[in-house]
Amino acid sequence: MIEHLIRFFDSSHLPPNLQKVVKPFGDLAASLCEDLQRSPERSAALRKLIEAKDCAVRARIMDEEGHG
Image 1 (cartoon, rainbow, N blue to C red):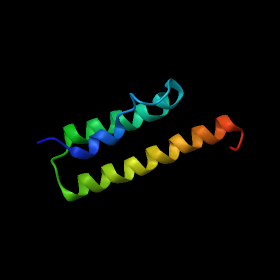
Image 2 (cartoon, rainbow, N blue to C red):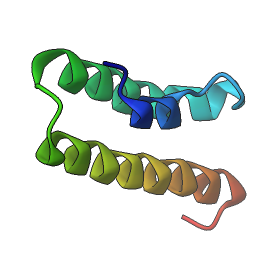
Image 3 (cartoon, one colour):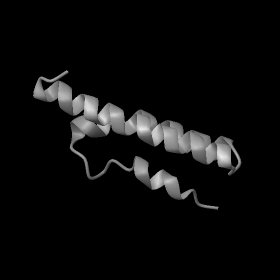
């Protein structure tokens, strides 16, 4: 069964500097989907990982704008 949350880890639309930030989160998300059976807890883990990924992307943008 396909995990629909995994699409939020796609970074192909982002510039390379942000793709680099997203990649480790995408790798971990893929690993979780491979290693854990689908469950509410796996979904919660992925949702929290999405939140962390979004925060990291914003942090990189702020760093590059000199607001870090």
